[in-house]
Length: 471
Figure 1 (cartoon, helix red, strand yellow):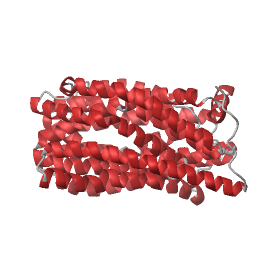
Figure 2 (tube, rainbow, N blue to C red):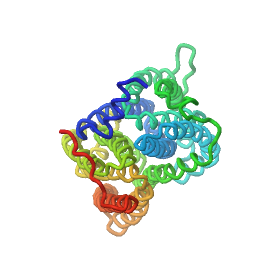
Figure 3 (spheres, rainbow, N blue to C red):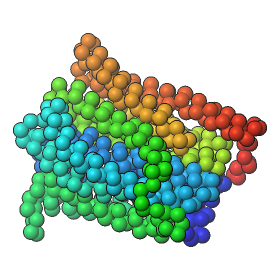
Figure 4 (cartoon, rainbow, N blue to C red):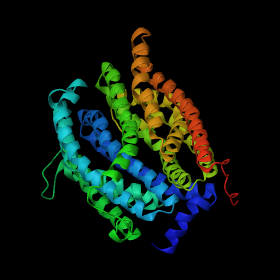
């Protein structure tokens, strides 16, 4: 590894926290921007194809997101484990975890393909898809399932780079990927130059081709670090101990993210009572929310990398300061985004649909959601804290309550007994977000205190607060 990369890694446990947060978060946020724009391109072209096409992508999103959640969740677990190993200065263990993470991704892809093909038709019918609408959903999903191995490998490789303090590679490739998607989506959808018109299947095919290119791009970047070399400790035969450790960290993180997909299913189920246009409006509006929340996603990456590395090094003082710094930056960034979302709701929705009712429904939701955006900052940063401390089960508990239990109870009340209609779902989302944010703060503080007590007990003395940080 070169001296620049060595210095960046050392800075994670000794450099000024605000500078490190900016160094990690800004490239990650830009990367997530282009990742979101990549998805926006898919939504845009699906909407131009037909309202049914837009609704099909909206209905398929929870299934596709489940795949993303598994890849991202397990890569998050690997990032935490690699960060702790590097914090202990155990590079051979870190390399072994990196290689076994890729092995695990390959094994998971087989399971996902089989499960997806068997379960998808029944799942879509449960959500009200029939006839041509059902066929559009399945056409898209079947192509995605065939290439799910590329998606999982992409996230695993990015998890390794995040643990090393490299968030720029993700940004660099997503910039390329978005440009490719703008070209490939219409070509594959409408056909031409020897390509038959594939409709929504073309959108899925473009996604898989671009993800496969991402595996090559990130794979080369990881290889240059030496983390996948046998000489540094990497091993490609399945290792039960390491796979078990990654699964132990990854399952709660994956399930926590999958609760988001289940939560979208629940929201879609309740919104489905108000028509297909409501479902389409919610699908487009969530894309806009993703754009507004991009700075938060970058802060998540920075928080996880810094917290896991410093927790491994026993620098709990830097862990706490990382959380506070990320919350401060998040408050500033999300404030501007929330104002934009509130004032420009109709204009933003009009970019995704020509249907005036879809635009009106989505704009109304965005104005309500604008008041809950900072709740997500608090929630996500504290989730990264729990994952970085290798306590992902607590974030899973929060996810289960926020995405599944509370929505079923609240939406049943607001849309049923109270008769609020669509507004019952919109205001239910608002209230649940703030309650979950408050709960995450209480749990996060409790886990920090518990880790501090455990470290003091192991050392047989009060926890050393570490060297005073440089300004």
